[in-house]
Image (cartoon, rainbow, N blue to C red; front, top):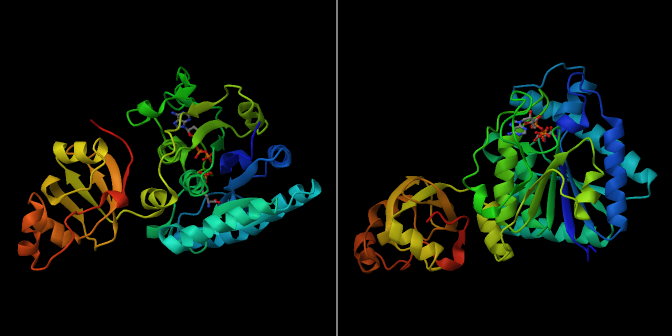
Length: 374
Ligand SMILES: Nc1ncnc2c1ncn2[C@@H]1O[C@H](COP(=O)(O)OP(=O)(O)O)[C@@H](O)[C@H]1O
Ligand SMILES: N[C@@H](CCC(=O)OP(=O)(O)O)C(=O)O
């Protein structure tokens, strides 16, 4: 019973194309389309995040390796994205399923009004019975504003639309203790509990093919984002898209990542995952306990170090003394001001800054806990 659950499916280049020739894996794509159409008809709200623009663009232009120069990669992606959507629209249309193209850059998720607008657009598409097909807008995404990989993009989209599931389809059947291509005795991992994820130790090497980008490291980063936002994430084989339906029916396939209970509202999720942090604040043990356990605001007295160059209202990462990220938040002061305030009691802020500023460095309403490293 899905009671209109929302599922996001990400499929990587390594599943969409042949690892050596770069040719399209048409049977895999067709099975994926059939599976997603069936799920949509069952009442699920379905989003497909699809890589492949660069890989398919290379194939179309007879390039034998993935471009390295940014401008060439963007040009090749522009060629491939059109063909990718043509392939999807031909197959989905054959089953009577309408699709939409959504191209995103980090910028769209950083601006609060854009974040809300993107959420509303997805909601309208779901009401129309459409399956959105999402990719990074490679043609315009510049380095400092790229998601970089579609594992991260898919996790941020799943958080944005408050998805119940995120399926990451790749060219291995699950996460292993090390790359099974290189370590034949690597141990399969079937379940990762929320409390284990922060300390999970695996050899998460790079991509298994020249066409992939993320490798397993970006999939673990995606798992941290998704599960923190209350989304259950599964890594499973892209060669068997039908596994999605089996997993939704309770079969324990692939690697399943347990989500933390969804407690944060949309605004706090935007703070935690939509914004790019512009710096770091390092806290002493008392401050970590106050914000993680006590749910309190961050005061200057608990700050031991500041890194980065940011202004008031920017997003920053909050780290413990060892540098482990524990939270994110919107600051009330610039990095230069916090450098002067750190370690000081709130009463002396007006004297130190020469004006009556906020009593807190980050108010608890603008603070999102990501993990508790006590
Ligand atoms: N610990 C690990 N467990 C499983 N696969 C791993 C691990 N470390 C590295 N890999 C490699 O990651 C690859 C999947 O990443 P990638 O090639 O980027 O796929 P995609 O294109 O689907 O994102 C696998 O083919 C595998 O070779
Ligand atoms: N936007 C890029 C995505 C790159 C990417 O993340 O690829 P992959 O690691 O195969 O999921 C493309 O479409 O090629």
